[in-house]
Image (tube, rainbow, N blue to C red; front, top):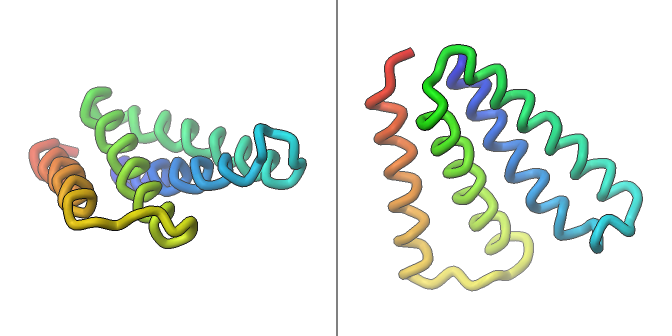
Length: 106
């Protein structure tokens, strides 16, 4: 179950990172409420995952999911560049996440 918590934490990290873009420096109420709520949820789920998973692994996977997901969301939602080198770098991060999952018991 700890990996499920960690995956949800990573998805919530993507949500708050994208939401942060829409807060306009926390000057817009509802995007700010969404962002702060998803930040708290993300850290809370990370905390639940840390009950069973090693800190280094959990933190690396959490930030990796956030990094990959936010980069993809930026390309899809915000028309950020999606060149071959950028996609290759994202694939390497995803590969690291998968390797950490495979090498970590629990």
